[in-house]
Image (cartoon, rainbow, N blue to C red; front, side, top):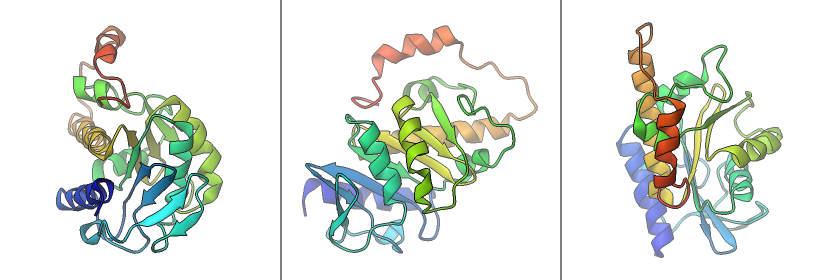
Length: 212
């Protein structure tokens, strides 16, 4: 098994073990030269095998392996929009998914920057309109939003996060989930989010897709 395939298996199992997804939801993708490795359809992340991944070309055509997740087009769109991204993680993690269901979310700042690590690993978070799972009509919206941020939140669905590698993408996803949990725990209370100056001071230390 190649290093990339074993990384997909390891991270998929870790996501399921940490309760960041449920049932057979969630999917991963990683660049492999001029191919994209994607988790297959209908398989729980707990049962992903690196030896049984779907293989797509850079246009999203299925070229080898089992049938890909129906949300493979999300991964392809993000990777096309972000040439330096190497991996994508998509889950239905509880607090981020709950955030995606709230009315009147600010599409450009759905969460206040409550922690430094949210500022370093996630912000800005872009909210997309609702599309049914697997609806390829979302492709253009995903691609456009991904040019502005590596962190997307699909309305009434969940997060899609790009990174320099799968571990970086997973770190950012966990930070989003943790911040969303803090947001709900402090709902109705006065909070002290980081200022724009605080956030700006963090950025040079953590380029999004090199050491996120």
